[in-house]
Image (cartoon, rainbow, N blue to C red; front, side):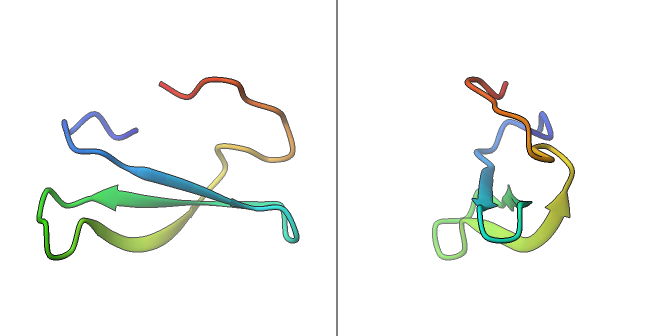
Length: 50
């Protein structure tokens, strides 16, 4: 999602409608960084995120 070559994670909470982004660290002991809120979803349907 941030084009740094590492896998990132998007998580959507249907109860609140919020989407969170976890940036990939590239480390096997801690594969994702802290949660940050994003406006990637905002109630609209996606079938592909590049």
